[in-house]
Length: 232
Image (cartoon, rainbow, N blue to C red):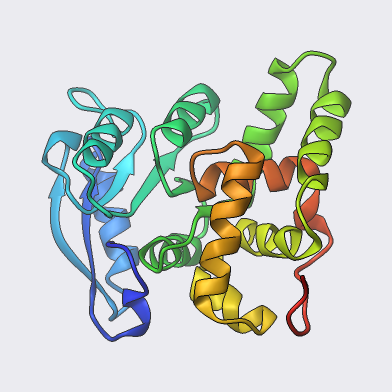
């Protein structure tokens, strides 16, 4: 999974699976190899060996969070999808801060794994709805004043965006890439990139995945994506 819209060019999405459980690795491989556009190039039980990765968030040796941080330190545009289980909310938040692009529940549907890999390979962020709900709930429980205050704070942050930026943020949270967003709202991809940069700066978040979590927390994902032509 590297940056850019490789999934749409015919170039295979090259994936390394890193999970300490052989049975999980076998299952992930079985699911991903059903998609002819995805090529599994290696498997490992330790995140140290992974370069292009579907990472188990928690492994002995080098775990997914450490591996993701090492990848990001190299400046590589490698896409990082984390596999997690319920009860690992703190790990998810650490991985989010460390630059992971996608989060999937191990017990999720096989189709979601393929969708997540393709989305991240295409330069998008991908949050399993179950993961997003868990992260939002965890943030709400940890935040002062409870869920209502967290939701209100998120909505206040989002209110500082322009109408078009809110549209783009909603589509980011839906897992769309810049190219897909451009086609959806009828603008050129460069305009979407500018919107994304502005959104991240205005929201004070480091990456698209963190922006997607904030969108979920603010309730932007419940109203559906926008349609229509360009809007300021």
